[in-house]
Amino acid sequence: MHRFFTLLLATTLVSPALSADMREISGAAAYRERIALPPEAELMVEVTGFQKTELATLQQSTDGKQVPLPFKVSIPSDLKAELHAAILVDGSIRWVSEPVAIDAGTEAVNLGPVQLSGYVPSGFQTTYICGDQRFSVGFDEEGAVVEGADWIFNLPQAISADGAKFASADGKNVFWSKGSQAMLTIDGRTLPECEALPHEARKSWQAQGNEPGWQARISEDRLMLNLNYGSDRLDLTSPEVRVANGSYHYDIPDLGLSLSVQDKLCEDDMTGRPFPQTVSLKLADGSAYRGCGGETMSLLTGNAWMVETISGDTVGSDDVPTLEISSEGRISGFAGCNRYMGAFAIDGEGNLEVGPLAATNMACMGDMMQLEDKFLPVLDSVDSLRFSEDGALILLSGGEPVIKATR
Image 1 (spheres, rainbow, N blue to C red):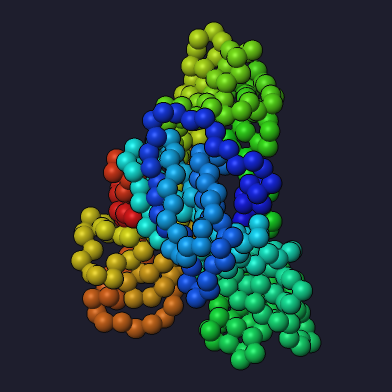
Image 2 (cartoon, rainbow, N blue to C red):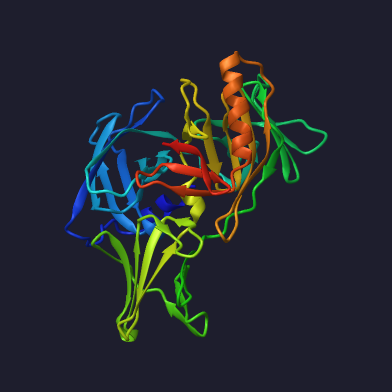
């Protein structure tokens, strides 16, 4: 999860030469523990963009100051980015943040407090999913290190006749694994049965366009191009990325090729499927191809979507239904009274399949139950999606908008 800092510590911290059109990103790194920082502690901040392109880095002494520690960096305008912050003591990471998303734009952004949590290096790390909860487990010489979105536990090994069991002294926090299945209890509450997720290989990136059909793929240090419906193919060493004018440019002057990637919503001109990047490919003969790149799911995952309308009717309740979509193909959230969860899939043509859905079985006041009884069947009927100009998520059924949600 924090491999980028390991790589950064092994290299010279030099920010790349970037476009003059910059914007300021500021915030303050903090942690909840009441632990004083030693005078030699250092603050590290890194901002990365497309394919982990380094946009800005900062490493500075804290000079005896304590949290919150303010920081300020500049990145090129019109690029989506992720910011990570860490505090180092004696050259080792002691506290680290989760990635903080930064939307593309031109205005300065103040992130406010960026919360860091204690960093415990552990080996053999595995990620599990339990219903709509996700956590990781690693192991060190003292036992299991179990980490969720906003909590972390060090659990010593416990006696077990079947599988590997780790538990706190009071028994309120327990991790018990048996092969690819596991059980997790947090503060006395047992989560649904957990499944281990396969280890994620380093992701490649792909773009494609139509008329004529073409594809581009960036994988590791290779740039692969399929042109003219696959009749012309190139497999090249990926050139160093150049950041300019709100885009990432991969230039191969010897062949007269240039691939440009922009963090701008793109819809496939045949299927209408949305993608996170707009891509252009220029060839030596002066022709230019346009297409879309990235993963549609990346537009949906992250913070929860808040439902504003259902079948054209505005949701008047303060407790609005929510949509939380994971990269593992799960949807979950609040339905108006109960929590729900289910499968979520997008096929190559951009068609959606939602469900089957399951929900908890709590009884609520009449208005809340009516809202839930309206929302869940509509969600189950959804078969496609699009985004409005202002970024709202529009879910459709039979070509008609049935749910509008915003962040």
